[in-house]
Figure 1 (cartoon, rainbow, N blue to C red):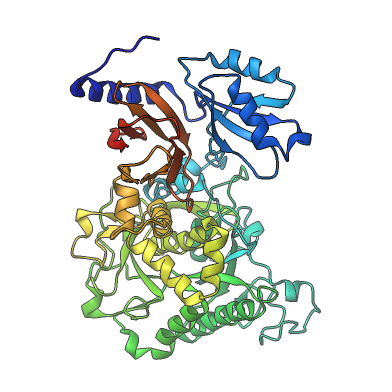
Figure 2 (cartoon, rainbow, N blue to C red):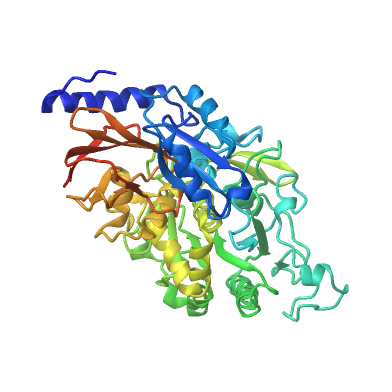
Amino acid sequence: MNYKILGPFFLACFLFLNVILTAQNQPNYARINGTLIVELEHHLKAAGDQEIQNVLKQFPGLQLQAKITPYAPIYLLRFDPDQYVSQNLRAAVQKLPAVRHTQYNYSLQPRTEPPNDPNFDAQWSLDLIQAPEFWDYSTGGVTATGDTIVIAILDSGFDVDHEDLRDNLWINWAEANGTTNLDDDLNAYTDDIIGWNFKNNTPVHGETSHGTSVAGIIGARGNNSTGITGLNWNAKLMILTVGTVAEIISGYYYVLNKRLAYNQSNGAEGAFVVATNASLGLEKVFCDELPSWGEVYDYLGEAGVLNAGATANENWNVDQLGDMPTTCTSDYLIGVTNSDRFDEKVQEAGFGTTSIDLSAPGGPANGGAFTTSSDNTYDESFGGTSAATPHVAGSIALLYSALDTAQLLALKANPAQAALSMKAAILNSVDQLPALEGLVATGGRLNLFSALKYLHAQTEEFPVDAPYETYTTRRSLIRVFPNPIQASESLTIIYGNGDFAPINIRLYNALGQELQQYRLQPQPFEQQRLSIDIPNLQRGTYFVVVENGKSPVVEKVLVY
């Protein structure tokens, strides 16, 4: 192929146009052009590195990009698509006696589809907080280390037989597998198989629509062709029926007992409760008037439990007038107000830049959330701060399900820090809304997917002053080094791509020829970096181009 030398202006145009056109014509699951996976016969494993060099010698321009695994002689090769027709090259390589398999390389696609629950399309609040985008990576239920995630709900009653909730109720297996009328787990509550009714001091829960609706938002069974989907498709709901200050304090200590037992037994006992939800409270009461209630949030947080509390359904400043639980100053409590589907604060919702951290989408009574209700039915408009707050509690639990093993082990070693990390992720990643400016501490509304991106940014090994903004907002080249570079060195490219969308990285020479191309599928908590060998490059100027569906970014690299 003949190439024409391009001036700087035409080179830039060529680079940008080539990248954009390639991206437009290449779907996410497309074959990665210019690459070929070659597996040698397994008896050649010990000599595989030398044998692959013999393969390369037979095809000028065919280069080794990477050894895919140290456990088998499998290699990723690269070539210039203008020099070789991929089908012909593959066929020729396959004929070599040392070659066992040849195959193309493809970008993988997340396989999560929207849930098949018939009323999912009516659940407008889930789209606002980008729950479907999060579900591409996790739908909740279990951590990477095998912990069953539990959310405790303190409310007025529950329909425990609801078709969309019963399979997601937390089971106290120590009692379920124990002896009837005996306190098998020695927690002072006999036969508390599915939580406890503190109103009547019994394991049997009374049925109310309020608690049932709250539970549905957090954890209605997802993708079961029934009703709706909760934020967590498979997490477990610890239900605790309460109606007075004394009862809610008892309920919180029940949660604390279960989480401490889990921590102290390394998961053999208790429950991995990561969040509580209180969509109830007291108006015009300050936390220092009810210190036993307020102090329990610190105890829970130190054990690893982060708490979400609803504010009043009144348009007043709770900092001035009081509210429980949101005026409690515990670092382990998130105060929640209510916004609607248009991202406006609902008129009948409390505010306060000290007590209220953020809003979540609950909507007014006549335009609220579609969720579960009592008598095995559904409520098409469950609104108020009672509907907003479970979006926060459910998000806390869902974030735990997406963490990788290394993060989980580190956080489980320090449960209090784990709770604070989740709070920081939620509060520092809100969608800023003009309607909330000066009304809540963050000035924004919950965004679950952004919270995931925030946590991811904190794990990037390349230090920057503002990791969340750098790795998620810029979505571009962050650094290319070393630069200048010797031809014997490896070039490292660090990029930002917070949406985890497929990304193209290409290397061009000064003539506008593409020398190397990589199509990557970033994943949460994986380092967003690429190291490439450039052993055959001559001295001169080269260009690295990074593109992810937005404007390409070009970085000049000097080879000496």
